[in-house]
Length: 126
Image (tube, rainbow, N blue to C red; front, side, top):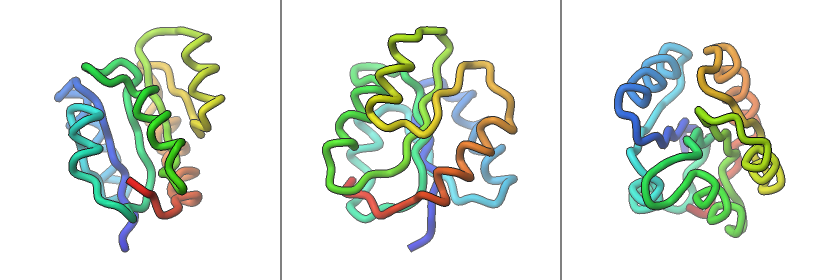
């Protein structure tokens, strides 16, 4: 099964920008506007890496990460946030995020984080 970068962000223009950037790096990318949409459409056994915004609609990126952390095997998670909140960052790390990127982040920061995630990309129970 091909590795995929899953991008979850409620900002459609940012989602499109991230998708273009990641595709230019040669990765397969699927985007979602909400955590619920991601959970609904991703079947068990997906492989790759998840990039999710912390501040989404009803379910936050942290809540999504917590759901994934309770599954037998999960996607490596990279969280992004436009707010500099040390408490949220600490919680993300506690839940196992491989990176916490503060917006606006450099393209290279995201690419390096995704590379780490893709190298660690294990089958997911999503």
